[in-house]
Image (cartoon, rainbow, N blue to C red; front, side):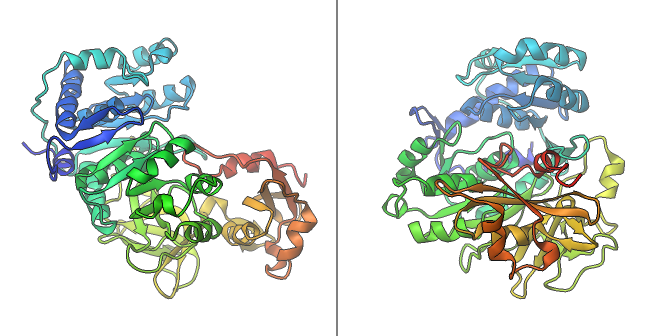
Length: 503
């Protein structure tokens, strides 16, 4: 019996005794252990009444057992629903109420607060903590180490991932076995992953980056992982000599660069550094190259599509771009209103078509239809352009577009200039209400250590480099810019914080 995704994940196991995963404490799982342990969790879920197509919601800390729950869910033919560990009980109540999972797994310390939600929605509540202890673990321990994996085809659902919900209520992106398998298979080839790779894994696994990109790719290649519960600078520095590849968000790389212990000798053997989930500044890209000799490979993906583009493995990895569309992925830049493709070099909305594109939003058929063109292209909401060499650049989200006095201002263009200023660590450009212009451009900055920024020192160097309508009308300096768990700057928080600047 074929299970499309699990078969793809386990097609190239080089040797059952090979280490698949090792924690900083030294505990290890071989590929043989992975097959046995995922079988036990699949059996446990079946024992709890999970049937093919049922949802299994999971809000637990990153552990090897949590990863086995994911694989066990796929083997049981169910749909995996990972939830951010930072979500409050009120937020979790929405997701559980919307997805109606058959089983909901949480930390034992949160069980009392979440028991009512689980009971209300008819979900069996199970627990699992950071030490791998809990009722689900106990049940799995009693299950056989072999399991007849449930048959699932490529169009069957494998996962539901909820979008961040910065505007309106969160939407559940439905990802099929085919979506996840095809995308990871493509990335293994494009990024040249093999059984010889050791991936330094410091990303969370409730998000597509850490779970469906990092873990799936590594497993499909038959490689090994150094599996950290989170990004810890000292642990990462200690483990870098043992790794060949790392996937991270830009914050990982800025933290490494801030450490004097991060040297070229430490990573001279390295094969590949990949960055995603948030824009990597050209300054960080250049600083990393100067320090290590490695050009970070930046790529572009999203919850609804996984990976869409990548800078080349061989060739020029251009700062400020996300490279070229992946093989089999169609990408075009369109006018947001008409849907007509714009000329090369012009800014428009990025639209994607391919086997990686999700099946739609869970129980939101009208929203789903709104987000697709009649020819099947998905409207991403990201604004971008394609240059004369075919490189794709992201200039911001469509909702971040600022219209000031009737003129369009793309925040990324202004941010690129601000980030070049000597005392600026990072910047965010937002639009806030203005009585005359409709929206005014506002810059929010974080200063580098021992740097002092004020409005005059920030604006003076860019006055001759930007049209007047693009220049910030006000500058704020914060200790740090607000970010979500994946390192993305939360511009919605900043817009709310400074909405009264001109009232």
